[in-house]
Length: 264
Ligand SMILES: Cc1cc2nc3c(=O)[nH]c(=O)nc-3n(C[C@H](O)[C@H](O)[C@H](O)COP(=O)(O)OP(=O)(O)OC[C@H]3O[C@@H](n4cnc5c(N)ncnc54)[C@H](O)[C@@H]3O)c2cc1C
Image 1 (tube, rainbow, N blue to C red):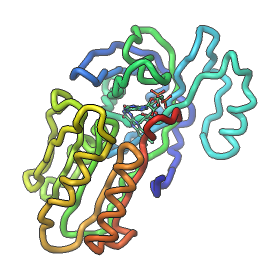
Image 2: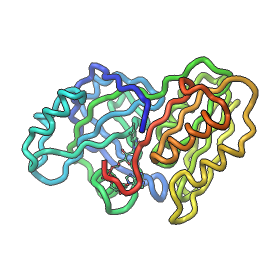
Image 3: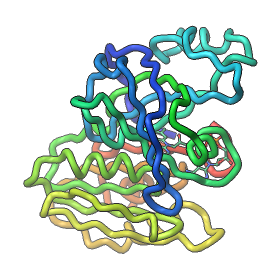
Image 4: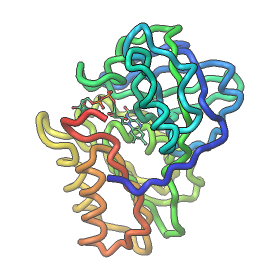
């Protein structure tokens, strides 16, 4: 479930190649994409995300993909021959460097299930991909402070928001990881407190973040909340804020980034 709005920048379909990849923490691989098409990229920062076309086999083609991924674009995508059709997954811009035309993406490597995670874990320089920009989900309403909640899949989004917020912003971030060794350096404003919480092995996503949010002493004043990650985490945070804390639904942006046991 999600209430994020999709905006399409005019960048269209961008065909890029992997420049390099590096394992930044035990379960996170940073893949750097590069290519001239990034000249058209409209960088917006924060949690800007995109549809990423990843090859499933050697016959994958990227030249016949739609330039937008609305209903029409998706229907066009479905008519492409299966053997040449890449899979589409959603990812966040971790960092964009206009001067070198490079875009970093942090992939959670979550095992051998799925396509994008395993692809990133072993990808080599030169591999082709394509991406279609979807804009930002982050849509703050005017508020006294902000609450950010995420799991490891939402870490790139929360890191981008903390990096790009005005330096006088105040708030709290709760980030749940299945291994605290996956913590990253963040560039949060001074008025932010970041809580890293660890999910016990085998327990459900959200099982550490939800109690941590429930135990928070909220600062006075109105809050804008942003909760992204596994579906139960995102919807659980929203339910708590609306039901127990009286936060208006319009002050909450939430999105299930993945669903346990379900391929996208
Ligand atoms: C707006 C948006 C931005 C996102 N940004 C990022 C990002 O920057 N980095 C990132 O890593 N992910 C991000 N995600 C989540 C990513 O799209 C999903 O995790 C996606 O399902 C991964 O595709 P896959 O092919 O690896 O696995 P799938 O084929 O979709 O799933 C295969 C299996 O793996 C499980 N699975 C999928 N993702 C995870 C996970 N993260 N942890 C554990 N198990 C998982 C599924 O439950 C399923 O059982 C984002 C999602 C959205 C909606």
